Image (cartoon, rainbow over all chains, first blue to last red; front, top):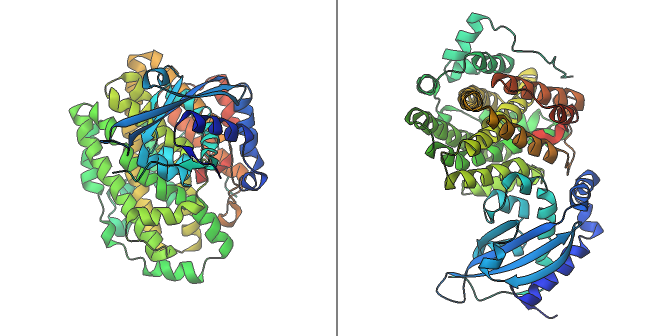
Length: 156
Length: 328
């Protein structure tokens, strides 16, 4: 199976595809329908932008960063691009975390718990607006581990 | 079942008040949880200043190492049905994780406080750390979870916590991060205190305490849990009174900050509609309507105490609150 380098343009396009594909029926069955109904309600009219950032990538002295920028229209991802930090911070929300934290999340650590534990931090955006759609964002990010990913070598 | 009248704090007999106020750990074991909750609400009528609350802390501080969980262990294994265990864990595990979260997320709020507020918050930090250790001991020594670290044990009880727990507590973490960037910002302080002291401690915690402790007292089981958690409830009375005093002062000095109270409550109540798993209360002697009424009553009392009215849309949301909040 082809693997995509973490946080590259190709990886961003795969992320878009998997988020739009959504979760399997088997996965959805682990939570009540009321939960999915809530997500459908808050996402149906949601159009906005979310940038994801990773810092402390291991391919260097420890300060390298990478960003992808996702555009949502009516709850679907319509654009996904690898961007610079400057462009990432034009997004409505910027969620950012260290590479080692992303690696943990990509290996199945529960996204909501990861937010609560600050594995990802909201570097830009209105906190209340973000939490008004929190489980939509959580479940979108929970699709990312499905991307066949080639990670950089072990973080320092 | 447990429907409560929606009313203001009922008058508490001075003698009972004095008992709750001064009891040591052995004494608090005999106090009815309802009296401790009444004690909380009586304090809301006065909203003491931080240094008075700090003096209370020095008087009411208890030693978690004085609790002996051996009878609790026997009760858990011999006197509690599987259905009761599942309901109990679904609710108590939210507290297990909640105590850890309010411990680690309180510091940003201290940074922008007055010196008197900083003194009190250091005592609250110690309280929250002690509560975290209390639950760590309960889960290891009574429930039987294994782990070398506090996080190991937390990871063990996470299976009982609803995914949506990370809503209110993730919000707390992110509001704390925002506050760290500008600890003295009045709007950010009001948002944080509304989530932490009004909602998590004043509504969620007090409701959970009433449900699980009422169950223990009625059944005559889990004596160390009852003692430590009853003492925890008394500790929470200081925290809630402190937080509501700050909110009361803030919204009266600048009425525009009422919007921040409303906005946080609106987000919390909106998240409450996302129920990912059902919590069954009946084995603990409660039904869904009773829990819903309990939450609504707790919320209205706290909002009333800070002199704020709920807007019509918030009142409508309160009427539709889901009782799964007790599990997070």
